[in-house]
Length: 336
Image 1 (cartoon, rainbow, N blue to C red):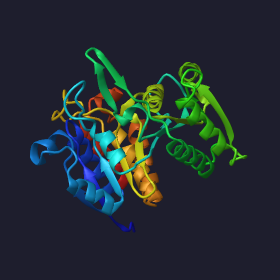
Image 2: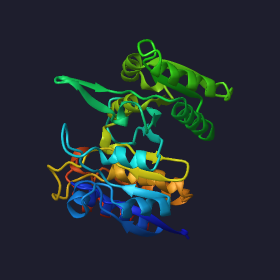
Image 3: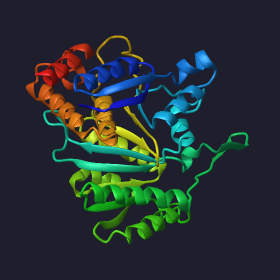
Image 4: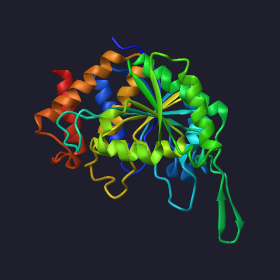
């Protein structure tokens, strides 16, 4: 019997509420005993509370230590700043973890992909320190610190050791940005020296991207600064079918926010055709994080069985099923 958990739920906007409701239903069908504290964020919170990150939401996550978050819209080039970035910085969720693997029966360009992307989550160009020097000239500051670089490197090597991984590759541009990326690379090498059982190497970011699309199986765990990590993790998702089939977690020393990394897809919101897979697999990461591994295994198997059968698939995976029909099929597998 699952222990009782209290989990902060952020349904998100666009397709967020649809896929979040689907995932909650699947988790409860799998045997998770949970009280869900639901809170708004982003544009819906701005309309109701005048802020994209209400104090009530932040207090809930701090109290519960764990949250499941649906996708949130971020305006491009104007409007409010990214709520996702704001959550990570406010709660010091310094590590973005994105495992990338092939889902059986989901067609992709590569087979046997099994990568883990570890992205520093709190600084770099995503610190958002920008200003206009003179009209027509904008300056953005790239912030790299020894503290953050060492912390994310230790996270990557600890993860590798805990999960039986053999190699951690630092991805950087230290040949050009010798001070900022150079500091990051130095920190990763220093930390790696403390893990003699794990291979510690590095690649320049552009070369790493080329080698990933040539032969992704040559990599194991990749550790990157914030901007490179954002780009490379999406690239790796493309190797196995896209952002709709990969999970993500934002982790700190005390708290974790588990999220779908795809967009809020307002063009299909309310149509009942969204695929909940990415958020469901993120919830699987959450289940393992809260020591509900047996339930996580059941969810993974039920999801894989439905896809393997091939009769019930959402449109993005070549089928015609609605979100509810896909969810129903997984729940039936769980209750057999």
